[in-house]
Length: 140
Image (cartoon, rainbow, N blue to C red; front, side, top):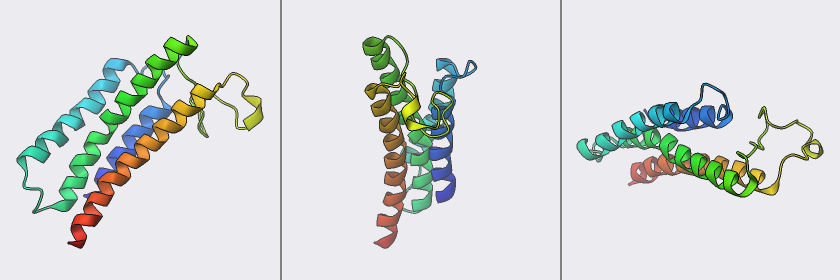
């Protein structure tokens, strides 16, 4: 179950990150596919005896990560629209919005880079946090 929780956290978050500007990827769809697992995870945390099953806690926390990621993504989008007049460009490898040659992206500004790496760090730290909870409690 621990790998399922980490898989949900990373898989869904990275999928939404790299597909964030696709035409089919509407705000309604994003909130739905991140909100439903969040609700299941939240209900599970309150209803299940997590002391008995530490791996289940990682699964439930992993289900909650995509909504947190999505909240930051939408916040960064609004900030970028306010200060740059456009949604930010995703400045990560394999993004459709940049070329792979670092110096050939003059359209990318500092705010684009900061938001891109900020989202990457948020996804990784939240997922690591869920995994470390399992490791710490398993050791006791």
